[in-house]
Image (cartoon, rainbow over all chains, first blue to last red; front, top):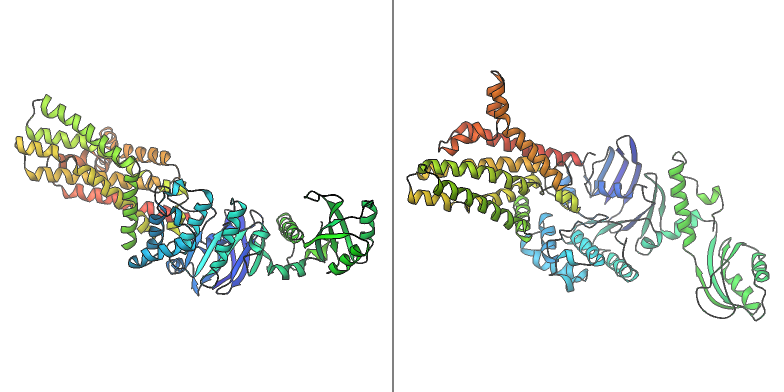
Length: 335
Length: 240
């Protein structure tokens, strides 16, 4: 669906992108992950034909974005980081306008708008002025305008930013529902925001792709082991420091860090453990044998995210560093 | 052409969704009406002179209205962040510019049409020809259309509607004052400057009911020039 070869973008003398090379298959949901300034928005704007590349080629559905931008635009629905909304229009008027300006048939527009309103759950506000909508609804209208003309490719720039936790869950479901009918590219600087919706993650730093794969593949490649979060109830009279030292002494346990239990209760102990490989069963068996009640054990996502952020940051600081060496081989990830 | 009409219709509705459109029309009608009342009834003039004076006064209000109507067209899209919707739709840069221009032109046309009762009063009560009225209105529309094109170009330069208005007013003012500058110059520069004047040399024939094709061509050239420049500015935005 998308083929990018040796893409570069310069703003004056400053390189914002490049060299950038990747392909995206039809029907995939792909996340672009990176810090602010990593080049995500520039990449998406070039894909959406809002900016022209300085060098390199970009094709969407086999059509070059420079030689035939209008044909490419007809295949694309784009939600920029700020939804492009006319505050003086109602949601229905706006969606009709967005669909028609992108070439959707006028006679089918009414039923298509109703369909999209249903899909994005905008029914309650469909005849309200956009200026009166909450941030969450505005973001939904932004997504609705991006899909109203049935594009093959949907590009969403930070679709979850600024939403509350309930809206984030709803937005994830909405994005997941696009799978199958559309190829979707989403950008974010927070791994957890896109790891749950995307089939594939492209990590960007300094205008380049520095990692590519599913979350599991990336974790395997970039991390030396596994990090878990534990909550246990200690037997009465337990010496916490001695207990933690005992866990630290187990073979394969690299580091143990105590943290707040975050819930009320007597004799609760919460800690994170960094392990060399998957030692969860061993750890639980050890704790149970010492009369600890294991209340919770979950795999931490924060470690992978921390590595991504450190990786992106180090690439910004040292642009000549190669992207071939995983950081886990360079140094142990910091907790 | 389909995209042009979709864009023009949206813009035209936008004028009436906010108070701006009705307020501009009301202000122009009020000022034109007051000036017409003073000149038609308070001064002893021939009916053809009253009509001429009406077109002269209306040209001033039309130019100001054209600046106000056009200064928001592209600048506001950038301010609201909606320009990206147009830019990523399969619509040419020229179509975006022309769609916006058409909406402002229709608005200006409606505003001008509403002043028609004044020349009709002269026609009924005095001795003027329908041709004089038609030619006068042709000039008024061409002048307004030229200032709209200037305003649209100014609007393509900035994301601030106020700055766009100031730029449009400066360009329009400079082009009006070209005739005054012409007086201070020697030949052949003076005739060149006089020919370039937005109002004086090129509008006077219309006021007196003379359809001068050279003046028509001048206004069409100004419109084409500034609309092309605005299109190029929109196009250049992608190359940043």
